[in-house]
Amino acid sequence: MRKTLRVLTVVAASAAAFVFATPTEAAGGLRVGEYACYGSSGLLIGLGFKVRDGSHYTNLDGDSAGTYAIAGDKVSFHGGHLDGQSGEDLKDGKFNISGHGISCEPYR
Image (cartoon, rainbow, N blue to C red):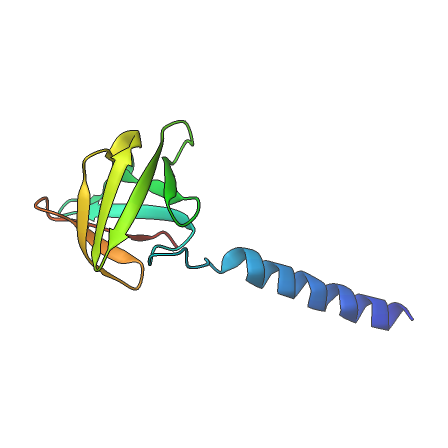
C-alpha cells in the first residue's frame, strides 16, 4: 500500500509540474506567462511583461496593466508600460519591437 501511494504521489507531482511549467498559448500567438526583452546589450529589465490571457498583459510587477492585439504577425500594445509599442515578425511566441532592435520572447 505504501509503495502504491508513493508511486501515485510521484506521478501526480510530475503531472502538476508539467502543467505549471509549460506555458500555454493564448489566443493570437502569445503564450501566457512571463516575457523577457533583449537589445544589443542584453536583457532589458524595464520592458519585461506578463501575458495574462489572449488580450491582456501587465508589467512584471503586475501594477501596470494594458491590452494587446494581434493582426497577422504584428502585435500592438495599448495602455500599460508598453503603450504605443508595436511588434512584428511574431512567430512561436517571439517578436521584434518595431524600429528599436529589441526582441521579446517567453522567459525560461
